[in-house]
Image 1 (spheres, rainbow, N blue to C red):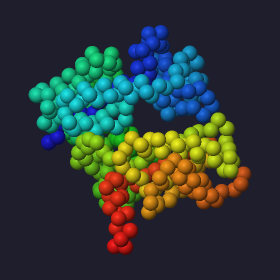
Image 2 (cartoon, rainbow, N blue to C red):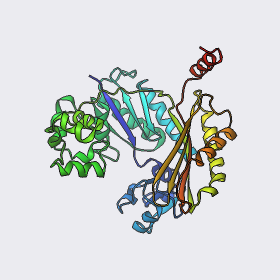
Image 3 (cartoon, rainbow, N blue to C red):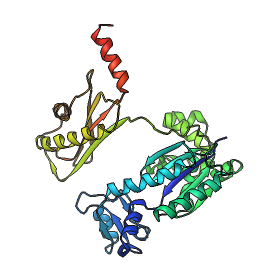
Image 4 (tube, rainbow, N blue to C red):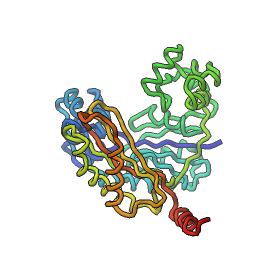
Length: 356
């Protein structure tokens, strides 16, 4: 049986800002650019008391907490701290799967640090993070990733919670289905219509019924209700996609998007220089003023060879958008996906060149 730890830094971006600027400590801090289209990247616990949450429009955060201090995000600093934390994880196990800058799964079934239990390892990691970064982290310890992620949120901030193998069923029985990862407000409402508000009630529904109603997600719900999650911790996952997006200060017509598309193509192309893999699919993403999301993509035999080539393909994809001329767009994104190893792409090219 696996021993999994999910470590989640507490209000990470905001906590870094409060650590580095003593004047911000104890005050409601919102990490966000100011502006009509800006969203909250992070909020300190002092701001959360007022209902401010990440991904919330910055204007709404300002209304909820007029005294909040708005700080523009500094991702260079956040990434540097994230690397410090990652180095601490690696002292204890090679099996580290980062989810973002501020959270990761660790498989400590066979730890390299020699500490006897997963609970002690989590305590040690949190103590080392505090000592070396002056930041706090919360941790969940469980037999799998699904349960560990729920557990890490149980005693936030600066706490940890253990769901032992013998406690899984009892713990899940009274758990609200809204706490199951992947169950958002829409799915929660659909389950409520079936009389299901707890995981224990979800467990009573047959797999066949869940699959008929919810497709492949129904099987996942069936397994989660029983505490089943066979996913391993996967370090060094290969890049699957890279993209850049921009939300405009004011909505724009389709023909006015070229400068933004070229700039985003440059940004996406620069990001691909950090990976040895090569992408074959170009994706253009648009969001209308009515929040409708449109995507157009093209998979190529020969990957784009430059930022200019990427921009050219993205602009060609723009021509495939068939919307009324009056449509206005609030967001555009340029992405690359379908990444393959460089050797695999070279082999395919060689095969095509020789007509095999």
